[in-house]
Image (cartoon, rainbow, N blue to C red):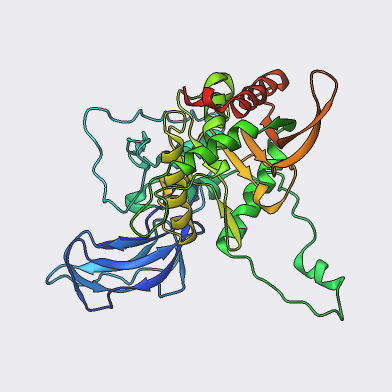
Length: 433
């Protein structure tokens, strides 16, 4: 039996082996951990799904394998390896078909009986409870590959699958994509280094996370028509509510409070309430359509060494601030340890980036595709404002900027969303009703 590199998320194309728990020649049984893999965002132990003897390890510690690649083999009693697994299989060129040939239709997913799959051949989030679709040619296509093909206008009947049992996977779509104008990447490393001859510097190679961030942010700024809306809002009531809630926290035996709410916890709740009040803005861009949601799933930007990740608080509109706070703390800790599951940082209907703790007054964040909005929150401060009687008073204030995808959220809709958020911040009790 071939042991395959699993797919740990829709955007994950490869994984690096950081540890082997078994050596060639060791006996294994179902459930035994074989190796640990690491992607740009998470790490996971991969177990055996059958009993036998581990043989023909193709990728050692520190080596990277594409999703679906054979990394080793497990031989049953009396079985011998037919051939050593190859480290990389070059994708077969797709033969061009005559233009007049009609594209073979893609069959709908079979609803009567689930398609049996080895558990590590594809990992799907709970929200996608369906298997790979079967093409007229008899091969299967994974959900991610099917979506990529639709977005890029690629005829699946012309794509040869290189995944397990001939399955069409995401990398097949990438390789089959028609030549297109490449995104500008700026000067090459050699060109940049030539400008600094004779000057001492340190070269820092890009790791998987920084490479992914760079690619996605360039794509976001070049393909999403951003516009920005900014508003100042008073946070005196919100701060008072937070202080009162923290003061009421039970104290454990060691003298520490049971919980400690941050201003950001209340901001998440207020942003979720705003998205629910303005449902047309609680949406994402999906190529040829817009997806609108009936719940507010909020991604929260968490800084990591060398990058960032956005764990998602599901159903933030229905959760208490205390529950939101506990979830964020737990996911942030596991994110820094690269222990988040793919379905914990993928998806969401919007996101929040808060740089207030660094003293940043205001900024504009880049939208994380396929989201249509992201809220950028600045630091709180004391600011003078004019009172109703014409006098001047000082209030606690913060500035928030919402970045909008104009394909989904136009100016008036974005203004309504920001106004709703401001109203919940300035009258925080209304966000809890």
